[in-house]
Image 1 (spheres, one colour):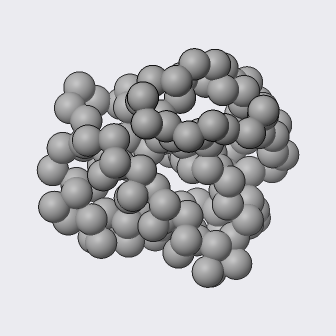
Image 2 (image 1 turned 90 degrees about the vertical axis):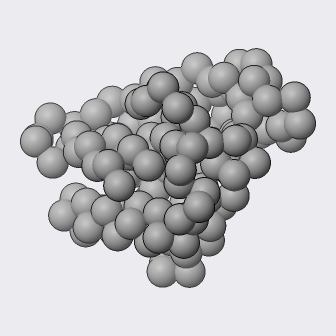
Image 3 (image 1 turned 45 degrees about the vertical axis):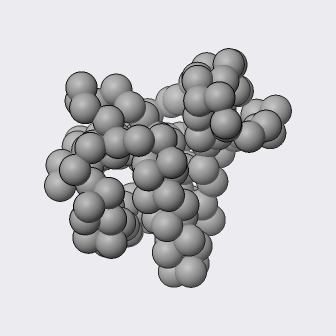
Length: 136
């Protein structure tokens, strides 16, 4: 798993077109302010270590959210951080488990539409910790 974490001062997303035929119908748009945007790339080997990857991803997100003073998280499946990808249903399951565990820990979590190409705008804060890459 690879995760690019961005401190989004302002975030807007609109679904553009379906990329996975069985993807559901998304909401019209998504917005957030002062949130931690997690661009998550699930690799082919990650589903075999599903629970471990969920825990590692959450640990990194909680750590950075704490440093930034935010309890708002956006999980975005982002299959552009490596060449290999997990199967869509496996990647979505991993993201949904991350969402559930973060929500159980008191975070306000939004998940971008899975299986869609999206257009989005993000204003990333300037400090060094506003941009963190992690690989598990």
